[in-house]
Image (cartoon, rainbow, N blue to C red):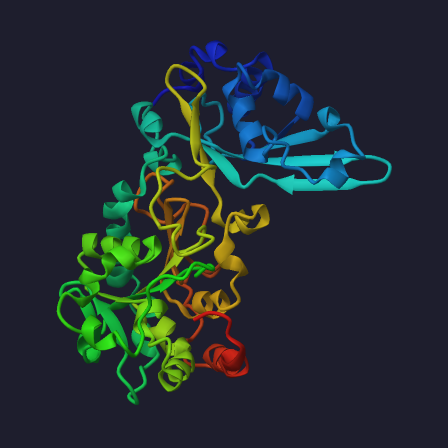
Length: 424
């Protein structure tokens, strides 16, 4: 395993003197596992043209585009504002010079006599995983470079398999028994048509959560539902479907999954009786789905799930042997107006009831269930290391029940909103 001096060889070609000194100080400290170091906005902007770490700090905090409220900028001298670099490191053996992997989060603090403004970066920094591996450090501490969504599909399949096979009843959707009053219509991806979901023994389907938008696109109506139920009926109108739906269909086909529920196609939109009956069953639709696909970043149904890379997911080289990767934090996307789905009122129940959530944000896939979180920006199919999987007592935590007060609360919300629903 390499020491930190080896890891920093050649860093003078990629880093300014201050950033070189910070990393040397960070790795030379043998005891601390949390270190905060400070710089200024002016220094970061001045050095970002030639320093990789300064460039990452400017990118993560939005300094390149000055994404700071104008009311704040009018009352402060931005170059004097403070940037904190918060480093987290695993423990190290005393008197050892071995390199420790780290993660960095950035925090911007601006203050004057009349104003105080603070923001956290929407992404954090990790060392690229394959660079760690070459230096003899576990790749599980690292991050992956940006990749197109389609290349993440094998990893998504591993997440779903890991959850369904290893998490047992904690992530099982069968604890919320489906209604027997009316069959649920779904898209059969194998036969390319609408069909009623088969009996409970084979009831494995995915549900799609997305923003409709204002564009008028194809939907199921009384006049076309019979044709869509014919074998190949959906395939025949595929060219009329919005991109988010066709991307979800392609995703599930690649995952070898057969059934997809999507409100635009699986609810007969001009059949008031059918529509309101299904709205009253939305708790069941999302609670019994094997997983819910959430198109978080799309402002409308044409945005799609697939993309080349997330705007926050980038990388920079800091030495001859090390590259740093900016890992997007999905939890902060709404703060930066990058998650339109979060502004859709009915997303609340969809996220609340879903046992497994497969999120797509600007092409980056992440996965959540009651027992783990995964991200395609993190190196392996193991759960994200900083997400606890166990309670303080050491026992595995069980997710909240689906058939108790949580489900009742959602049913009450559905009853209140059913007559005022703006979009399915």
